[in-house]
Image 1: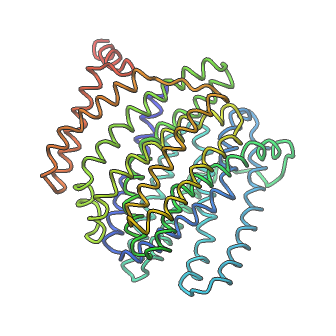
Image 2 (image 1 turned 90 degrees about the vertical axis):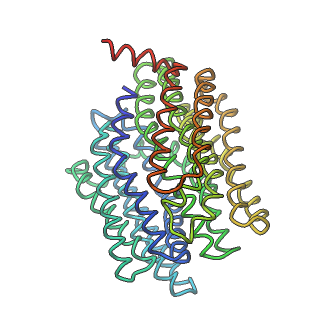
Image 3 (image 1 turned 60 degrees about the vertical axis):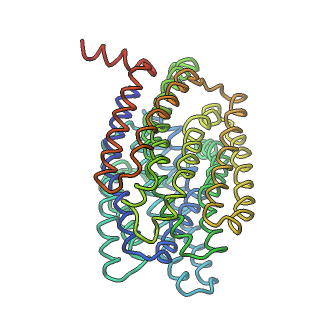
Length: 471
């Protein structure tokens, strides 16, 4: 079931992932670093407010819908009511901030950010509803509509001279259209209404996680604001494009596993007990490492060619230096967030998770303020890596006290060995640059890794493959 759902989510996320790559490549060519910087800062700001105010709704939906499958009306009605209240509050807050902000350019951007926030929050709430119902094809359709519409309209607006406003308009319209087409049927016949017991359960579960994800957002995005403050909007744009390129790749692959694995783990825990959940978790961790580790190694080794092919000329030189550190940092962040952090959620002790990410956020801000003036953009990359390493270690250690997560040590070592051996032919091919060279490097790397994976029989994949061939 895990591998089947992961494959479906991979196919469902493939088109949006490709479109997102095209968006980075296109916008880094159409926008100046300053314009890209303003666009990236608005996206980061909207993301932060989305996490702070709306994330707990999505997390509660994903955690509690399996227990309300037979009668989800009260849960969904409570979610509707909470969403409306939060939208009114954030709208008033956005108008106040825009009125007080001195820069006229940012006044307009803040006013645009408010409906963008609502659109993103509603779109992601519908995504989690579809995911919790185990409907990967509709999940992929929603993401696909959003990505295609956002890029098509965003590029059109940029060509019409809208600058950094163009991608923002396109993204907002893409999310609204996708939610309207694919999510409307889930809410038919419902009206916003609070069920007090459900709201209390959602608050006690979701609010600590809101703090956790807000602090995690500080680790992943505060560097952009600090770079803009210390170095300017242009360097912030260069750093954002480089970071987004790494994040879009590795996070997409790890999210695919999490999208399939977490609902299955929760159902196993609710219906069959702890041991069944741990068996499911062991499979999930092996698959997560088998996908993420070689991808991170490949990105780190091929950073110069990836930057040359996918980014505009103003972004390439810095991106080639940043990408290896970004890849390693995101690998640590993903394994922590999509595996070790699940201990706090499955054990319903989400408050502990706040301390884990809070420590990483404080370290990240301190190191950014210290290292950016000395090392420039590389200082931000070093700080991000250090913060994610601390969070990874704390989550793995403290999570054991809440819900013991099984770790596939032997398979993990085999995956690491196969990934490092795969990196050798990639390193030898670095003198070849260009799109065709990059495609060949990815193909060769994938083939070498697959052969090594089978030879080492990671997770019993070779045994399963032979059984399937000779069945």
